[in-house]
Image (cartoon, rainbow, N blue to C red; front, side, top):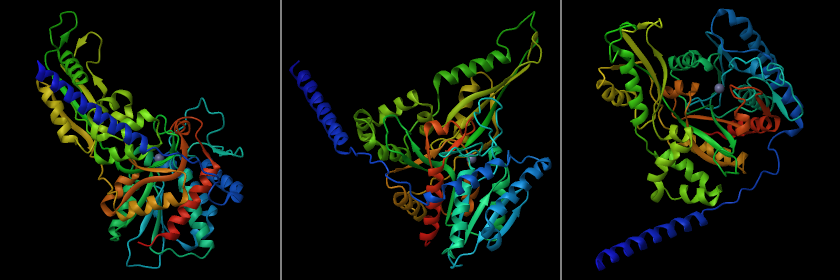
Amino acid sequence: MKYVLYGFLILLAIVVILLIIAIIRAIIIKKEYIPATKVMGEVARKEEFARKLGDLIKCNTITYVNPEDADRFLHYHQVVKEMFPLIDKKLEKIEIEGYSFLYKWKGKNQTKKPILLIGHSDVVPITKDGWTKDPFSGDYDGERVHGRGALDNKSSFYAFMQAVEDLLKDGFVPEVDVYLGSASDEEIAGVGAVRIMKYLKERNVRLALVLDEGGAIITGVLPTLKAPFAVVGILEKGFANLEFVKTGIGGHASTPSKNTPLVQIAKFITEVEKKKPLKKKFIPEVQTMFECMAPYMSFSYRLLFANFWLFKPLLTRLLPAVSPYGAAILGTTFAFTMAEGSSAPNVIPTKAKVIVNIRTHPIQDITSSLKVFNKIASKYGITGTMIKGAEATKKVDMNSKGYLYLTEMIKRIFPDVGIAPYMITGRTDAREFEEISDCTIRFAPTRMTNEDLKGIHGINESVAINSVIEAIHFYKELLKNYQE
Ligand SMILES: [Zn+2]
């Protein structure tokens, strides 16, 4: 009895010591957020920038799908050409089939690898209701520019084009070749970016750095986090559609047999939903994201996120339960999206099927996920196959030249902003360039709040003009200071 008591006291002492260490760490890592006192960049040119971005938004560039859309995109090309006369005059324009395009700005040093800034020109369709301003008005109210594409993605495209136009006016020549690219069909994961990549690949262009959309400077990324954070996209999840089919005896609904194909499919779905059989794990990049943000969070969050050594198992369980994004960054997610039985209400189908849409994480790829599902499916005589998919992208090395250079520039231009690596749960054009690029980063230097984010693919999309001014300044500095 005495030994049990001793054992218990020793255990208690260990727990208390560990908690004290965790609490001390949470206290000492605390950092105060110091808000920015001024807008970086040419504030005096506010009106000009707003008008030009507005003119791009006025162009209806809902995704290029077929030749009927040609006129709209031809008009957009014309607007871009007139807006940036020096780019038009001094850079080589490469027209890519389907109204995507690429500009080449020749640098001083042809032996060094070029860089590519890319921003798609298409936008998603608009819903008719709910917009307080015409989505193609490009309206400027003195603070914000409104309309479809204001954030996704005309503001960052405009910002890097304006930066280059201004640098050309100053007679600046970049150190390396700089490509400026824009696809016309990013929003439907089209072929524009692939064609741009192929054009470069055929000319043996190997890029040192690709910068596309994906991450941004976001205020309120996590609860209690006051500091805005530059979330730098260093990898993209993959996706796949898996189809599960069961065949068997059907018949007339008036004389039903048991365990028909549709019922078996339902059982399969129920078991998968209940078991949630895919893995969950913190990869170092995701852990780093939380560790970067922890110092600016409230004490309780600091306690958790500054002490992965102690709370990792708890966080692995907790995070997916409290947030869908939390679940998405810890593992491959799945969602049952389409199901099919018979085509008549009184016919029992001889074949039933269901589609599972998965978003793959580096810890569990398509093949491995399918294997897990098939193990459950086999109990019901169901077989699953992949009908379409693409794996998660490579991870950007956080010690690579490209990543270090980019984060250094973010620090310089946005001194009030924290920086953290970030996993993109959606898809961007950037993934198409990995094959020919040393470092492919998803980050646009645009400040957004959680409220602003709702405008992306939603209603009342708009961007703060101060953010556009800073983005132009950022791209200028990025190009001016780039060495290799
Ligand atoms: Zn976009």
